[in-house]
Every structure is written in C-alpha cells, then in structure tokens.
Amino acid sequence: MEHKKTFFSVTKETKHGTVYVEGPVPPEKLATYSFHEGLVAFRPPKQQQQAIIEIAGLPEGRIIIIRNENIIVGYVTYLYPDPLERWSEDRIDNMIELGAIEVIPDYRGTGAGKALLAVSFMDDEMEDYLVITTEYYWHWDLKGTGLNVWDYRKMMEKMMGSANFEYFATDDPEITSHPANCLMAREGKRVPPETMERFDRLRFRNRFMY
Image 1 (cartoon, rainbow, N blue to C red):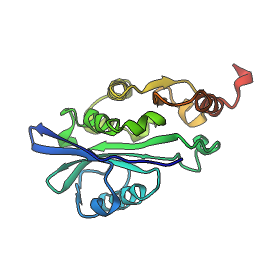
Image 2: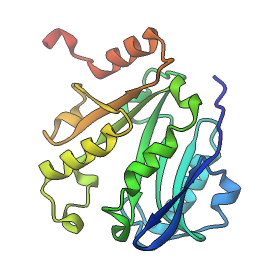
Image 3: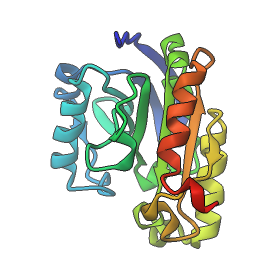
Image 4: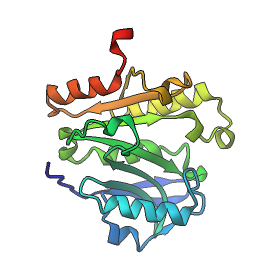
C-alpha cells in the first residue's frame, strides 16, 4: 500500500497564546523543534522526541503536533501496531494504530486533543484506513487531572468520538484485564469489508466461547 501524506496546518488561539496544530510533520522538521518538558506520559521528553522522529520516518508513520512557536506541547502518533501486540498478527496493510496522544497539563481543557484528531483526519487519504486505538487506564494521568478511571474514560471516549472513533468489543486479555480499558476504531469511508472481517478475527480469538 502506498502511504500518501498531505500536510495540514491550523492556527488555534488559546489562553497561552497562538499555537499551530499541524502534520504529518516529517522527521527532519521534528528534529528542529524543542519537546516540552511536561511531555512525560510515556518516557522522558528527549527519548519520546526521538521516538516520534523515528515514527515520522516510517512509510506509514504520521505525527501530528501542537506547537507554541518552536516548542511541541502536544502530539498524536499513527503507525502500524507493535509486533508484540495481537493487532499485528495479521498484517493488514490499511490498518494503523493511534499509538499515543499527549498534551501538556497547561493545555488540557483547551480542546487541544480534539484539534489534534481533527487535523489528523483532514487528509482524505485517512479514509482508506481503519485506525484503531487501545485505551489502557495505566497510561492515564489520573493524578494530574483529579479524575477517577470512569470519568477519565468518558473524557477519552468523548474526545475520540469527535473524530468518529467507536467502541469495539474484544477478548484481548490486556484490554479485558480492567473494565475501564477499551478498544476503539475509526473505519474510513473507503475501507473494504475484507479489512473489517480480518479485524473482527483479530478482536476475538476465542469466538467459540461467546
């Protein structure tokens, strides 16, 4: 599959000033920006910046960012599922994963997350993809937001729903290990039935039990 990427940029006014929500950003451009020290959800900022630069260099990789001048204050990643996850057992060419979405605490509540998703799907090429995302409560900043797991999940579902992600059931043990975890997916307008059939087989290994 040929992974075409068209760059989009949107200017957004926030209480912290003007920010730019844009992407997919190529790796050489990402390397010129600074990564805000508050982006610590997955790994230390410098390591995470290197990780998203590497993702941006993948044929299917897409990085959408929010930047205040030359400082990245939020981002979302898209790439093929991790080889260690169930979702890569059947390598579906047009199925990619929203692997991470993160915004620094100061920009939460400004619509930053929804803006990242909105710009992500401005590219018509995204209608060729089934985009999945796995939500695990242990990645959520419950302490920083003061929310319990259920309120945080409602917030995530609302944000993802703004980009037409929907809930999908699965028997994946990591997801079923806690009732707040969930699998969501966005089916592009041009995704063929065969892709959804293969996705269904990945979702349920133990279908005979249901």
